[in-house]
Length: 283
Ligand SMILES: [Zn+2]
Image 1 (cartoon, rainbow, N blue to C red):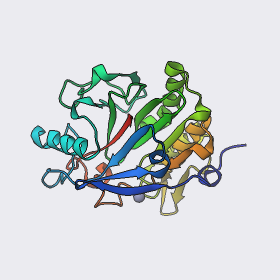
Image 2: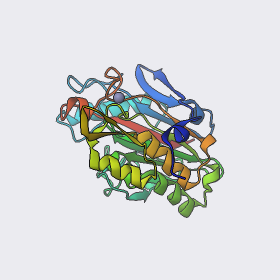
Image 3: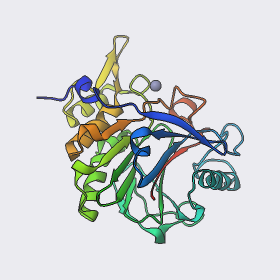
Image 4: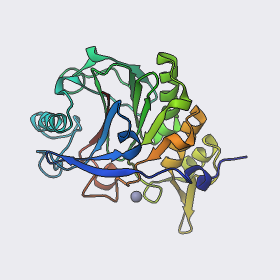
């Protein structure tokens, strides 16, 4: 039986909430927040020093804005949420499906130190490093295995989603640390929603095939050559295919395009936009 979008998404908690510390605003999942062994967040625009159009907490290092502002934003985030600035490691994403294993020796890479090799996700079992990924409509996969105390974080735009980077992240946790997908807790970050994510019909149809879900996209009568793809459904299907139980999955149900006060959006603002970041760390 093919997947049906409503069945896939039904029953999965939308458990995000806004939190603020020292003026720095982030989105958190209650499911992951309840886990004592890990800390996480998805940043917003709120609480940084960047000037328009990057106001204010831009964490994207490839933007046309002084590096001193961006690094100050990283410092502010670290200070507000009990992270060591020198332990932050940022993925150098390329919309692929490469996943690195890192540890504390990689602390600072991509922030104050030279970038990591190209990849879109990483895993660790080392509490001495904070995993970080950058986003401006792309989603994030946060995965935590409390039994082996291992974590994985991935950046997932439509390309990464299509390449099943979330599923590969779970597999990598199993391969590296012996984690069992049945123990994993997985959270899907904010992203561009189905209503806003217009693509060519052909691409939308390839999503339907890849995820065996004919209604993973919708079509509007006035735009028959376009499709509107649910990246969230693609995310959930690949986590289920990885073996993560449905009751261990939750969604941060916020659209980066629509929530202008909270988020940067490439689709909405083009190149003149900053980046949010996801972070995940063992404690
Ligand atoms: Zn939307």
